[in-house]
Image 1 (spheres, rainbow, N blue to C red):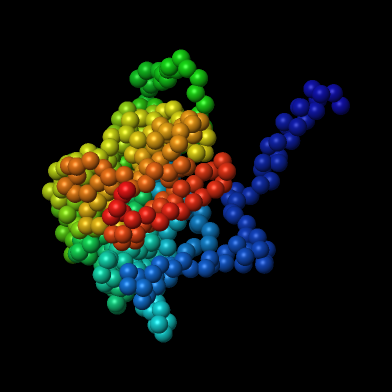
Image 2: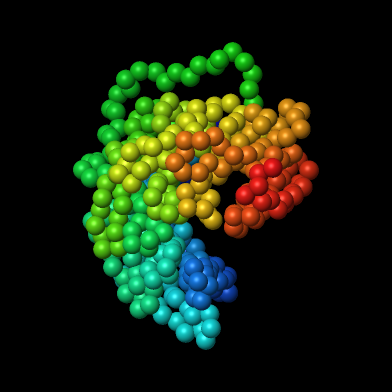
Length: 409
């Protein structure tokens, strides 16, 4: 048979092959015992209560259902956001929560709404309540459970924005949470343009720079518009009764964290210019301290767009990073700061330093340690003890120091 005749015969056979297929195909199940292995319920995760007398036993699904896998998502600067829930697409959600007493093993089931999928509950500081997000189509909402009885109250009007992570954090008083909410009256997402308004232009600055590749980046003005739509949050104080007190104006908030003394808020806010080359964690980020009425008391750091960075694993952002509350102090911020500009190729005696800044945040930061390699984390134990770790990826070495925060020298 010639090549021409073979092609003709193949094409002629195609309609008959297609007609032999059933009208509707369904997913096939694997045979046993493979199916039982794949559907086996994972070992529950556990979280201790603040007083270490109880455990939260968290039941997780084995594999996500097809409905979750097939759900739409919005690519947003490295994130994948489910537009129906305003939470991460295909994010793991719990299917059951039980409170277990460590001594004796008595259990109290948390009475979740039928079919509810929730994020990991967080104990209030006094251990009396649990806060969680009910992730659902049409708007994910806050739920609070009584840790003694397991009764759950769902606040349908407290619509949360969990696009960049958990939406709420407890105040030390245990009477309220700091939350990121979907702004009231946000409306539908921006409509896709029917015709291009102009070309998409990216310009080189005339110098060579190695860069990693990333998925789900922004790529157009329409992508930017949807990114702003889904990441814009309203900061608010939400009481355990569901009363909402908005703070400030809606913005691209990533975290809202109360100080240990419940007098300040640490807020991270993304702003422009955006990039089509790097993801969200390299966008400009303002780290601010707010008063409890939403006023900006201090801008701790305003990181510019970091479009260029060494591809070495020991590279990091120049300037302050990892700004957070010191756990053992009423209102003291702590962070690491690069001494080498974040570039591991630079030869310097010290790479990072660990500093703190106490309220009212008007003084100079206090340096507690300078590290020969990259900062790896700190545990603030008490006024005279902290454990500071450093690491170097290239040599796979880590080191931990015990320091006295009360005596920086």
